[in-house]
Length: 168
Image (cartoon, rainbow, N blue to C red):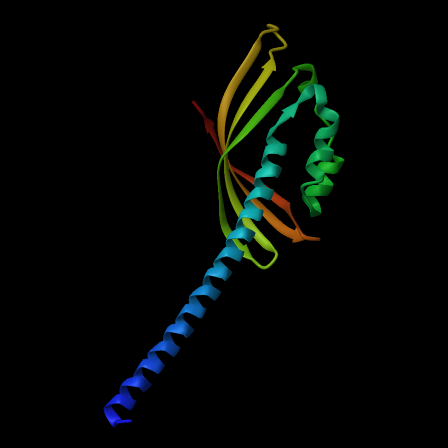
């Protein structure tokens, strides 16, 4: 084999090897991004479940409300929710809240911990005690949920209401 041909084959072999290494690296990177995407989706879903449960309320079915929230939370938040009692005035006013999630955004994600910013629109309805007429309002709320992973599940450990404004 002539020297120029040998050099050409060696360069071709080296290029093939580098291409194979590059393809392998891209595949590993894509797998890591997919796994991170799956974890991010799980965190967003857990925050969404909690916020929907937290923001959806019917005074006629108020007894299950604290337990429903406690099952989606952990730590001090879970203990506070489990110990909470339903406001008697909300029952008297037949208060009803319905919440729809507009956006979720994972703003922080580390091993076993995450923060999710959530924006919701909440419809509030109640009977005015003075007039006996039904009242309603729509508000947009922005909140931040802290989540931790426990026993394979993402649970909310803290929630902070950042803003409330009228919604159309």
